[in-house]
Each structure stands twice: as structure tokens, then as C-alpha cells.
Image (tube, rainbow, N blue to C red; front, side, top):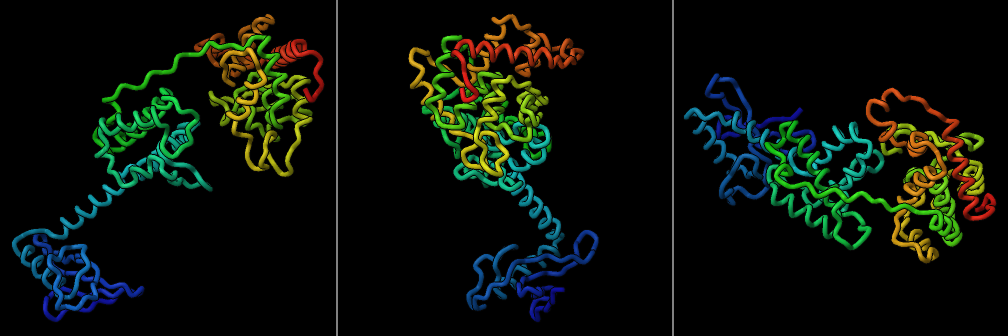
Length: 420
């Protein structure tokens, strides 16, 4: 328990000595409204000699004995005139706490932990846009990220003009604290930042931490035009053969993109535990799919052979890894190597492979609803009311479709071994 020593000159003024050795000044008095006894901590103790008087002692300051006596005498006079200094001190303390709670960095962390992490499957992407990343289960500031830049900025000071300038910076220079994929202005990048900020401020508005969402006054950046680029049979053939010029295990991963029609991250982050013992089935958990639904991929014989021949690193849970602890990354370099070997193929993206698989299957006569099942789509034949009632897995049809597609690729590139 702290020990209190009464001052001999000013009644009610005490020196409070804590077990840790810390010392502070406190004033005991009766509140003017109800005469209840109250205590107000005036500030910490300064060891400067008393003859060097505090020029303007204030509550919360670092006070000499002389300064504490002057402040106590002033407060006692104001209490005598009816001022409730205890209530004012509590209100100020609450105001300071609220201000600290409403800084951008604290609010952003609260938004991620209390809302996005529970409600949003890709919450990590929102966190990075706001300048945060999870490390060992805890959120940390990204160096030079948005939360670091606005670490102490109150939410109320972020208006539409400031938000506009930020989004323009992101559009032209990239997301602060994150590596840029290209040097060109990016509308999707600006749109993503607008979305992340708007969602955070909507949450803060709901929690009464701000009075308005500054993003409401800004036009949302335009959505990118839907691509219709499709890799045709000639280009698929060149792509398959070009995989022989890229490093392992990227070569195998690209072939699986062609054989399954799955998304890049789904293939790149494939885990050993997601595969059946005989490699005939790959089950992608809901947290790794875009629509949040478990996706079962019946693997063709060719896909199984490629996976079986992929060298695994000891103790690594990922099928494709160069580090032993993380899945493969750095696809821009792989894409550049593929481009160098695909002479005559116009500008294309990795995601165009998926569109090429869908188109190629359709040309083989595979039914649209089966193609959607293969791609894990919920639109088209599986969307709306039809999608609610159509729960048929149709695994046999899906397996037949992927096997037919694999045979088609083998026919394009000539006989391929398990190594491709």
C-alpha cells in the first residue's frame, strides 16, 4: 500500500510514496456538491530544488514542493467557489483515453481484430492495406505502412480531402509499406484502399468512434474492365513446353494450373494434408477458396503423376516450396521466364490459364454446370435459386471432365511422361 505524508503548510496536500519508490502529489478535499471526500492526484514529484519555483504548475505536471503547494492552494480556492475539480479531472482523463482509443493505428487494429478477422475471409489483405500484419498471432505495424504513418492521428482529423490524397498516392505510387508489382498507376490498387478505409470507418461509425465516414464523400475508383483473354490450344501448347525452362517446383505448379483450372494461390499453397493418400482427390479447405466453400478437385492421372514426382522438402507441409517453411512465391520472375519461351503469344496473365481451361472444356462438349463445378463457381447454372437447390456433387462427371481435359492437353503437346 502507498504511504501518505501530509504537508505541514497546505492542509489536504499529501506526498504519496508507492512501494516501487515512485512519488506523487495528491490533494484531499470535500466536493462542493455533496461534501464527499475526494482525492485528486496533482502530478509526479520533481527533485529540483524548491527555490526554482514552477512557472505555471498544472495538474498532471512534474511538480516541485513549491509548485505543488501553489497548485493545491489555487485548487482549494476554486473548490471553495463551487468548482468541482474532481469531476473535471475525470472528464479530462476520459477525453484523453478516448482520444488515444481513436487514433488511426488503434482503431485500425480494433477493426481488424473485432470485425474483419471474424467477418472477412481475406482479412489479412485489408490489414496490410491499413498498415498492419499478423506476426505470431499479434498485429504489428508494417514499417512505413499507413498505420505507422497515422499512428497518433485522431480519426476525427481524417477528412475527405486527406483520404482523397491518400488514395491518389496509392493509385500512383503503391500501398505504403508494401512492395509494388509495377510502376504504372493502378485503379484496382486505389479501389482496394478506398474499400478498406471505407469499411473501417463504417465500423467506427457504428461503434460511435467517429461522427461520419469521410469516404462517403469520395467517388469509389472504377472497377477494372473484365478480361476476356483466353489461352487457345496453340498458346497452351507453348505454355506447357515453356515450363521446361523454369525452375522447380514452379514448372509442376504451372502444369497443375493447366490441368485443374484452379486459382494461382490455391495451387501454389497446396498442402500435403489436402491430398488423399492415392493422390486421386485434392480437397481445398474453405479458408483457401475465393467463395469460402470447400472445393474438391478429382485429379487426373497426369496431375497425380506430376504431384508424385515433385520433390518434397523434409518436414514441409507445402507440396510446392523452395524454403521448406513457406509456399512458392515470386511468380513475376517465373512469368518472365515463361514469356521468354512463348514466342508469338500476345500479352497474357496467369489467371488467363483458368479462363482457357473453362473455354477448352466447353469446346470438348463438357456441360456448363460441370465446368462451373470444376472451377468452383457459384454463378451461371449454379447461381441464384437454382444454386440453392442444386446440391448435386456430380463427382463422377467432374472427374471425367478433368480426365478428358488432361487427355486433350496430352494430345496437344504429344505424349508426355509424368515429368511432363
